Length: 407
Image (tube, rainbow, N blue to C red; front, side):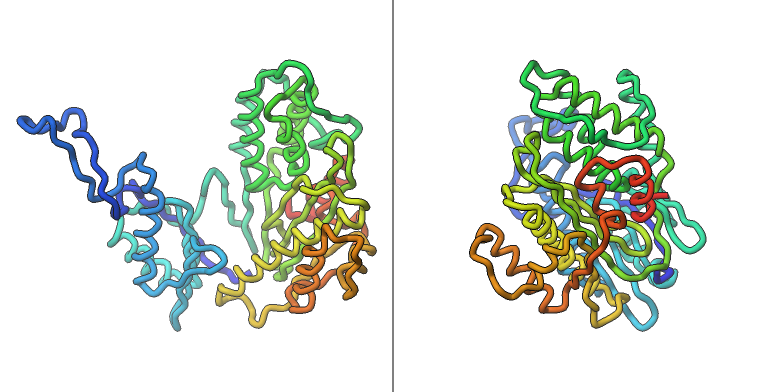
């Protein structure tokens, strides 16, 4: 949207940079024992890999170094730093020892790189190519995030499941219940669910519902659960080249919420689904089983709306702290396919029959009154959160995936 340059750097042996606050001693390492002082121990000044404190001490060290150079914290996410001067603007996103550096021009990026290299041992990876296993491709007018290589390795790892291509990630006609018999390859099942979760969280919102559903049976998987996992892998095999595409339009943040009704195989609890898009692609999404039993579809939809509203407030705070974002921030448009839920959200009168969602009602009402969100009705067919709450047919999956920016 703002035509920023995106570069990548990596900190070499990041955890060795942390300064220790506590007294920590270690035995002399094998091969480095000092003759005549075999019974003595080493007092650590810097942190080491394997110490409980190491991650925290590294972050504190990086924090103090980067803040002393004029960078400011983003209060919504303490691993995002920004610095804006008359000549340039720079934003740093840190993930342990991997970082992305965004700049309005190359002068700011080069100055930041030079400063970081003077403080730590750094590896300059120039323009971003791969970050955390996600391939970043630049094209005319935008970027695409893809995990085709990761998915290819995943399918190869589980090729013994005889994976066949599937047109959708979940077959809604098949009812899945808890396994009452002996577990089948429980550790391997947990491993494949974890692998699918990584793809789901990074670039594949279209498999969110299937992974959310199947992850509930990790402790005791049966044949039906393995068959459903095979279908998800089959769908990924068929759509392996899909990636999230972002362009410069639309430059507004939009959210969609949906909920499915309670089902017996779901402990009589509904499923919440929500998704946010910016620049034509999904930037944040979730599919989760609700924690309370609701009395109606409207109540289930309201719980989903509350979860969406919470994320909307956080995203607004995140973007407001970035100086490139237009100020003052306008209300975020959130779309809901339940007119009854919208009516309840805009209704000032509290109904005592819905005591168990009264706090959620008050929270959503306050966000509407403060101009953080505005709720707009959308038909179910055009609701991008629909595939996050239920299994859909092939054509609907295609349509919603396109709307999420999966191309």
